[in-house]
Amino acid sequence: MCRINRAATERADAHSLALVRPREVIDLTLTRHPGWSKDEQRKIDAYVNQLDMLNNQDRTPLEAPRFKASYRYRCYEPGCRGHDQGLLDWEFVALQRRLTGLSDEETCRQLRAKFLTMMCNPRHDLAFYVGNQAKRVRVFSVLGVYYPGR
Image (cartoon, rainbow, N blue to C red; front, side, top):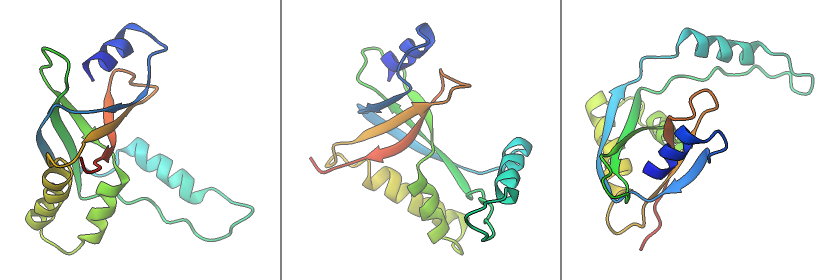
């Protein structure tokens, strides 16, 4: 990950997607999602109100999840001081939807149980799918977690 970050800083044609194997996962931080920004809400509203000539069903607006998360980890680069990357995995949001009705404490416990304890277990050959955005090429997020058995 350190090399990918350096390349994104140095070259405009650097990779924007990668599979990264963390050497050590330190933590999964969960924080309350603040809701959509005005710009995000405007885009969601534009999508919902957009006419579709082939489908006349109403579109359901995207709801903000209760929590957002970020992984703190070290990669295999010598001297790595660690990475703190937001988690944008659809499975993380889908699990939250299934946990509707639980307390915040219990929801966080179950999210950590799956995305930290189970997925990042040493019995798994863990890797993160990471990617950046065109507007923020130096900022990478974890887009998904790959964790087959060893």
